[in-house]
Length: 82
Length: 393
Image (cartoon, rainbow over all chains, first blue to last red; front, side, top):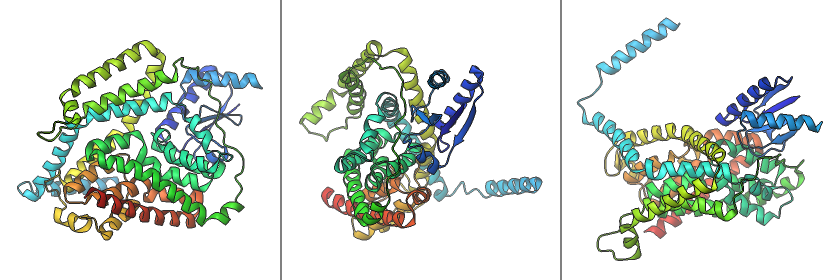
């Protein structure tokens, strides 16, 4: 699973990255977390608000800092879609 | 190397304190003014305007659906509507300065195009709730209102100018792809729109009445009557607010709201108070002298001449202001003799542009468009300053 965090390095984006790392550890799944910081690339995703959590190309709750629990939920629902 | 550095620091420190001109008035006064300015803000602006403003900003971020606004900035939206929404949307989309540039880039490349993107970029910093509240509170409601209205109107004008100047280029450039609003699976909160509205009204109501300005002596109007009872009114709104929180909100909603208010405060307050300190140090409180002599300020940006307005816009365009710091700096400048017109010009051009964000804008839209945008901002801010300066006199 590929989890991408979009954000230009603001405090909220860092927080989201931390939460995502923790969520992945707690779930014990094999996932790669990638930070996307270039404005050009962020725009390529079509996402308007940062921070955004992108799993398999789909953005979840852009503009909000998701908590560890919320990220776990999002990961599970993304998994079940496959 | 490290040792050498240490020696330099120690010797430098020693020389600094050895020659510290403690006795000189030119040194003591500015330091006193800087502390006095901090003292004034702590006493007058923290409890009744900054704290409620952060709570409101946090509530906007947490409880208003930003996507409801973003939908109107897409590629397929009616163009007139897109300009209108872009010019106003800063009030709920830009409470966090770090979201401005991705939004700008997104609207330009995936959404409604150059004009609306520029309109959003220009008005955003001026009409976010924090800026409006603190401008009106510190500098007076007239300039607060002029700032909001000026930003909205001129953002549309600048957006349209950009659109028509680059019309052919923009036609060739096809918006590629679609914006992605994302999947929001947060549960519905179970409040009606009216309940949410009352929640915001209760906070805004408290702030408006708690800050009701003292009327002039002998004034018998409604204004004076309200002033007499302002604390009763303010407390009534607080009671309404508490009632709403207890009966309409779940605990799980209140915590993230507090969290986001706190993160705004954390992000903004340190730089704001640093800005207040330096505004006091350099310019002094209104009526007092700081390091920069008042006559110097008055000669550059006093009155309401074309050159004063132009100078203020030009400086504002290149200088970087951290969120809200433009306000204490302006307060210091006005106190040292800056005219009302140039003050508005600086307020409009200042937060909208700075050297660092020019570079980011250039990376998105290219050098030519950035230069034209800067020129338009300086011209429009100068014109708004002239107009406002003439009205207020």
